[in-house]
Amino acid sequence: MLGKIKIAYKGYPSAFKVLVLASFIDMLGGFVLYPFFALYITERFGVGMTQVGFLFAVFAAGNILGSMIGGVLADKYGRRVMILIGLVVSGIGSIFMGLVDDLNVFYILAGILGLVGDIGGPARQAMVVDLLPGEKQAEGFGIMRIAMNLAVTAGPLLGGFLATQSYMWLFLSDAVSSLITAIIVFFVIPETKPEKPEDKPEESFISTIVGYKEVLKDGVFILFLSVSAIMVLVYMQMNSTLSVFLRDVHGFPPQGFGLLLSMNAAMVVVFQFWITKRISKFAPMKVIAIGALFYVVGFGMYGFISEVYLFFIAMIIITIGEMIVTPIQQTAVAFFAPEDKRGRYMAVFGFHWAIPSLFGVLVAGLIMDNIGPNWVWYIAGILSFISVVGFWSLHGVTKKRFSKEKEIVLGDILEA
Image (cartoon, helix red, strand yellow):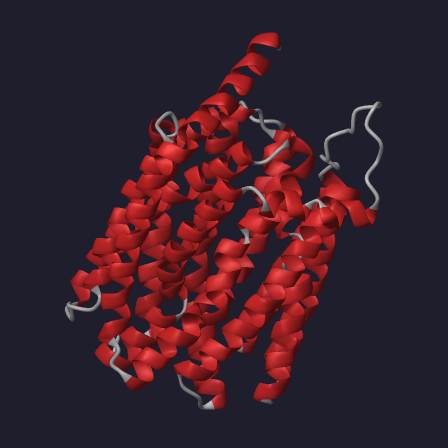
């Protein structure tokens, strides 16, 4: 399986390969830290999941604003510089977060890092679309997911070990990985922003910002984001609420949780490319709906099970859904987005994650602390089913539009 991935990978441009490597290094540091973030906060500051939810909300608010600014700047000034700014700021910020011992200061840092640290996110996604022809974009996003999950495979295992020594090592690892990635981007990856036609005047900064109006007026795209946000509201519990739930309700240790996430990531590494190649030719919204159906079962199971082996079975089911959903979602955004507005479409696409982050962990924390931990997973199953219905319904609305985009891609291939 990995041999087939390696052979297929040879057909991609060098700049894309370097981008994948750089992203892997950056994400490795992130996944050393991120899965243990809720555990760190509850232990370091002696608070419950409600306070953790407030912290995630502050960080998400910064993400929303930072992503909007980053999308505009990526379309105006280029992808590379925005990626560099995000990497350097997030690396330095991670060190400060590890040193802070006041929760209020921690909140402030989270807001700043959410704002500036995510400013390069839309640029990185737009760069994938810039570098790859339309027929390779789904597979390209699949490869990026393989890189991410290689990081997730190693990251939680390393993070679980480092957390037993000192949580500060987690923050330092994240900082070092961000700075190494910045060096690679600076010296190796070229700018990929598409050249404007000579007969089309350069947009001013203000007109570039105003360009968001066109994105927000794309009603079908906004509907797609709304349904996606429901699904993300569920999925984000895997890397936030689930670790605390398993520890407090079932006595499942941090090292065990790290192993659970590493299994999730290893599955993606082995099977993602194979799955993506076979599903990318089908109707995107139907494919995503089928993937979300696996979320209904996997996340819902955690409300009913208590045996350790079933924790892993539930995660396997979730992972299958994740491998179906994520690359097809990103490709769908590429079909929605005009070439000169890719950064802004990718930025608005980021809202489907950032907006649920404003309240998702907070509401889950309130439910855990006041109603009952298992209710988080009952509700997760219900919300996942709602997203299944939503995506399936969107198929009829998007079918004609996506078919037209595929015809354009095919025309470009034939002309080449």
